[in-house]
Image (cartoon, rainbow, N blue to C red; front, side, top):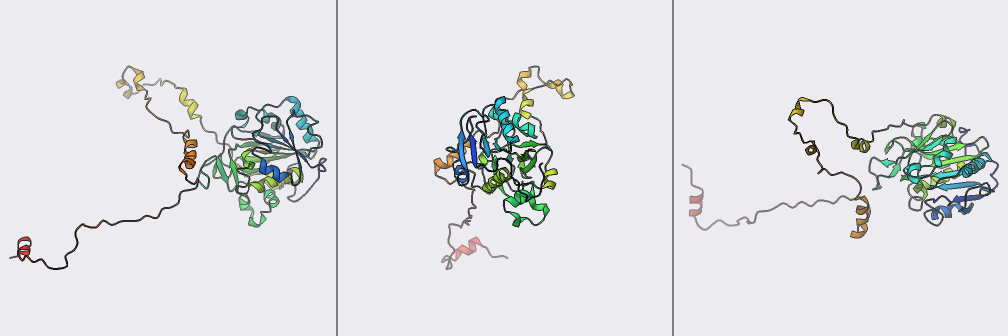
Length: 363
């Protein structure tokens, strides 16, 4: 039940409640008092926002319209996972945030809960391959990542859509410190990394609807809606669209849902791991006869690596030097033409022999 008309609205069993519960029992990275202050102000205008610090159970999800997991960093028990599944089967909605590195970096088993609905979290990180506006490559600006035209309709961005070819450019959002998702036919991919970021055209946000009208949304970046990035680009509109899907039961476009514009994953060799697994060459060439017998002399330990270890120090240097953290501007060059130290003569020399000795007359 993933593809429907773009403007259809249905009501689930829990549509009458207005309670949103933000979970804080799994060492979540952000909360309503740290990181999600702006998001909390935005939600409490329409919803009653509560915080859960206890183990997730059926009682926790009673009279709850939306349950939010903002990047859990602890493992879920079997009882908690079953409570979440029961909540979805009863028509409730769940919003899941994760971050770069996936379950491995967060030391959680969130994928164990999501894989039943056709969604899994990758242990990677999204970067922007071309610099634009933001210094950190992990602050990925996605300009063509919309996969479903219903997202543009819900965000009221249809005025920018001229034809079906530029639906992907309807929304521009900032995707900081996020990972990619794997989505099968049971769920629907709605946002991707686009063609500029790497990995290219991979899922960043996915939706799922249960037969009982329960809704699940998974976003690969919890930083995307924190206080630092919520007002950046059109992240607010992206969050509003997610809330419309989860609480107003906004339906997606069936054609785009069945065939999203995604690229196949392109795995690359782990060069760091392979470099540590040194293998001996069994074949001897003609050039090998001149090699000295002491093989330890063949290793060069003077090489240095190129990494981003100095990146935080460089960013902090802006404040230490009193400089603005902004792109460099063009300095207008000033060219100075050197002049000879002598001044041109304005009168003829008084010594007539000067010309005769310096410039003799031709014969």
